[in-house]
Amino acid sequence: MSTNLSWLAVLMATDAPALPAPWVMQLGLSMGWALVLALLGAGLTWRLSLNVRRVTALVFGAWTLVPGPFSPDYWLGLAFHAPSLTATLLCGWGLQRLLFAVSGSLSAVQPGFLRAQSPTWLLMVLPVLLGYALLLDTFAVLPLPLYVWGFSPALLIIMLVLGLLPWMGRGRIESGVISGRWIAPGALLLFAITRLPTGNLWDALMDPWLWLILQWLLVRGLYRQWRAR
Image (cartoon, rainbow, N blue to C red):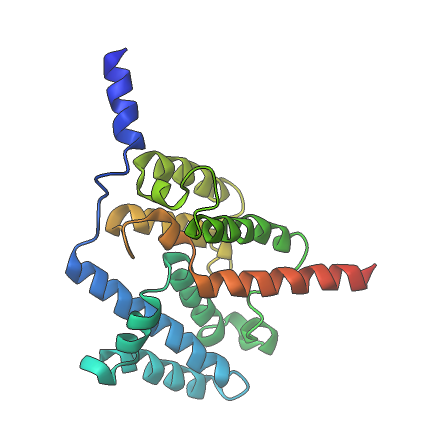
């Protein structure tokens, strides 16, 4: 019994979190913002030719390689730290849709690759609610601390089990396009290996910008459902 209790205490412990190495944290910050900026560049030129989109994305992404304050990730890191692993993988997924679209159809490369359609938009409710819960936890209005649980190994195990469920269903590669269902489990597995971006699981799954975008997509999805009635 005492052995089981000790293992439970280890799994629930939050006072000795596993943090990423400094060089891994810096690498993750630069790569994360590189993908974000590359997607931004590709999105700004999505109406132009495929070669223009690719060159623009490459230039925007390579901009993060500039050392010191001349690099955008220097200032973005100071203001927002690093994007979440979920946002980073979403940007990578968006890039492969915008720059390597199968069959080259315009509908496959539109910047609406995050379209909120039924029932997909329903999956956005939980992360949006989680964002509000973490916001309330920031102001210490919740009866129990929520953010600190992100350092608990038990939460990582639970989320890994839940995140791997899509792999047993439709989370597979079809027609050369990576399914978006792989993003959440991919972010969890990447966090388990690297502990990026801060060693806290909530930071790996959610960031303020991603939270705002999800709310916009959710509201748009609800509006479209209402208009379709």
